[in-house]
Image (cartoon, rainbow, N blue to C red):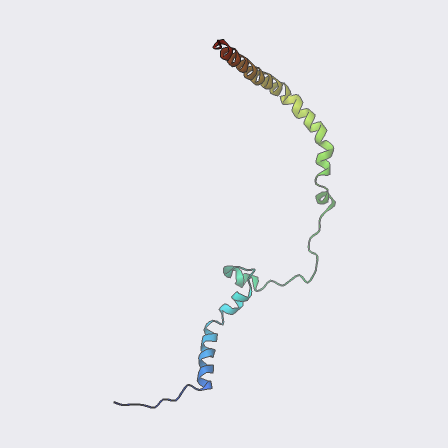
Length: 116
């Protein structure tokens, strides 16, 4: 048997191994730091500068009151829509209600005819 004496690893050896492992993952470290950017877009977002509080867009008065014009013209448009399709809706409602009421009355009459 040939026994060779080996010395325990030194601190230099441990530092070399940790440096090698650290350099293997050096490129992925910046990607892991950004949790708000998906990995395939990290290269594009790397060049984007933050705004530093600068306002780049504001709302115009037309965008701030988007409901008011609709409320002002609502009665006129509702009347126009009802005048256009109102008679058809009323006739349809009368026919459906009349059919339902008539069939209920006929069913009740048939039920009463079988009584003793």
